[in-house]
Length: 424
Image 1 (cartoon, rainbow, N blue to C red):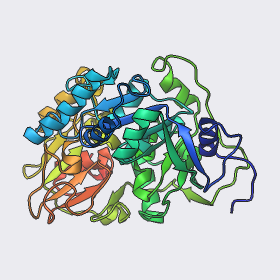
Image 2: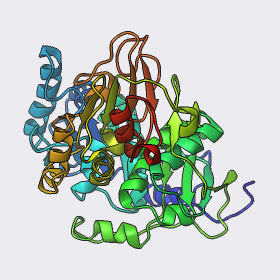
Image 3: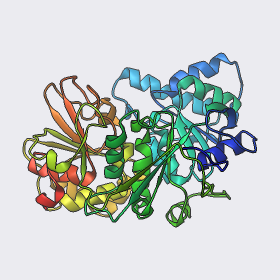
Image 4: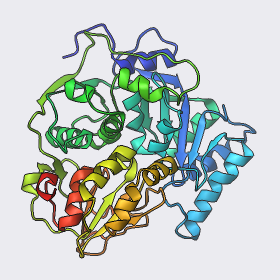
């Protein structure tokens, strides 16, 4: 479908960072990196590679971010050694943006919150969900640990410019339907490889009316469709979110009106139900009405996908004055320390604890089967996380279903997957 000489947002950002007037899909470019991110699983590998270079400095200590969030607080000796590698490297190379336990958060919630992300940036991270930052109009994508090592040394990375697919969502979203449902529905429509190495541009009235938290959720799961990145072009909601967070000037970048897209999808989401991804894949998506009555043993509300303050508010509004089903474990994991504090000040944690949920310090924890909520053989979990492959949250014979926070909270009360409207 591409027949335009005009450019998409991603093409413009990559061209600017590669000092080129214009780039096209398929071009190979070396682009300057504005931010390079690593966590306690991926950064130690990058650090070992970096040390082989024999350098006495990184390209810019202010443009590297290290966040110990996956196996922290450390669950065993091995994870403690991994975290120590980050800590020691940050000290040795004067990395400004190292976030220790007690001050950290799940990386993809933390960086936007701390004002480290703004429109027009090129961001790489040794974590696949680095695509989250496209919600703020940046080009951001996951890379391997060796690419991170090279970027920490050189301040650049190579890319093949991705083609762009456009997704238009029109209509007013029904109650208890949000960004998580839009992206699950999309993945269900195109499959886990439907946007393989593509940029996914999200537009339309339904997206325009999403909060920043909802937009971050959508961009976060672009990789679950195979996307190189997912993005929403900056608007007043973006600029309002950035106000008071970002210090300094930036220039928002936009797709040309007649930019060339590889494919355009159009969805009317006025009657969309809450969506459920059945195991064993994020594209095995069905409306919640088709999941009714499935028994669950664990519910997880958190992660870099849905652990933000609006997610916790939504869950608390559903579960207030109720009790978690006696055969269910409900885990609440605020995505950052600031979100944890805000939830405490708003009384959300009191609601969860009175409902007999367990509230955790920020951690990726159960999302990757790391700790703080591993499943036993035969158990089923309902989670606001982003992946549900075999063994993702524990035993290979366990199962994970994905949903939004309202569905998760309602189902924790009933003990079976349920539409929130039926549990209120």
